[in-house]
Image 1 (cartoon, rainbow, N blue to C red):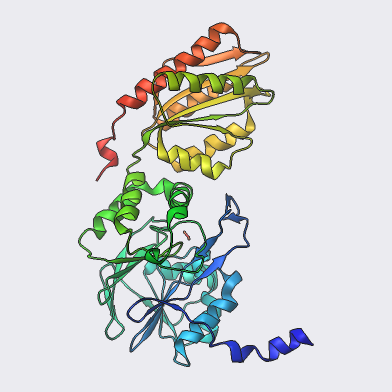
Image 2 (tube, rainbow, N blue to C red):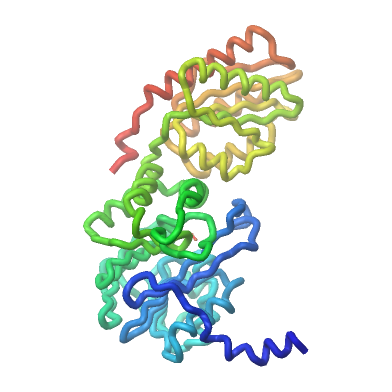
Length: 420
Ligand code: FEO
């Protein structure tokens, strides 16, 4: 009976939400996901994630992006609470990935006259994913849509993160709705705007988000940043994480640095090890780095570290050293899996070293050498390949590998072709 009572009384609660105001006439109607274990069913979410959506209340009303359908019910109630019986005139779609477009169909059911606004690629995806083809408005790059006081400018920014991605700038409030760009993992715990919270916990999550989600698209992000230069935006409303007002410079700078593949001084050692022999080599390489003055040395056991954190660190630092045993005449599978993640993201301009061990036939070093050729990274001359347990000559070689990578790292400069 209690559950039924809640169902019967549901409507009377539908206007209860007090949505947070972001700027004049603009309200946050997004949701937190504290339930999903893995984003895209791959990337861990220890701190959850938010799906951000914004409602503009003018002569015409407009919603900017939606949320994952798992939260469609509460999302609709937030919108209704703000509209207070008014209709929803427009849905602006900056990005079609289903964590943002998932609620399109349910919103259309509540507001059948609502016009869906997107570029030609967006509207094709709206049809493809949701079978919606009516009441749509195709906009072109630079086009303006007036809601009354608020004039929305559309800026196409393809491949930040999908081909249809665009940004929407509100001339009246100088709010820039950016889609995934400048987004990060981590739920919004009470506050929505950066100046109302301690943002410390978001920086690492922004780096992890960038590296894992949009890391492959450095060149399109650089293009988008260049395109944004003449736009005098004062607030960034991304689809994930805080609304940025106070820390805009830091956030844009982080995206700029990462998309240029600029690494900090430091080396990430990634290894797999079944019985500790390759692990001992990793420890020794780290010692060689330290003897050469490298202060930032991060060691990841691939069988234990979260892959999304390893990927984050690869984007963060200049040097990568990989160690693997030979396993059934191939690379240790956990290391292979990690290499594929790096290859997919096409990380550029790193220095590299490798080491491995085997029992009766060596294969790991061959694959690691092929890997670095594919990545076009600078590689240390020395590779260390030990048969069975680590012995003194290869102990010394591991120290030397660390030293060689340290020298390469110190001499590495950002490549001009990766910069705007
Ligand atoms: Fe948050 Fe590319 O979707």
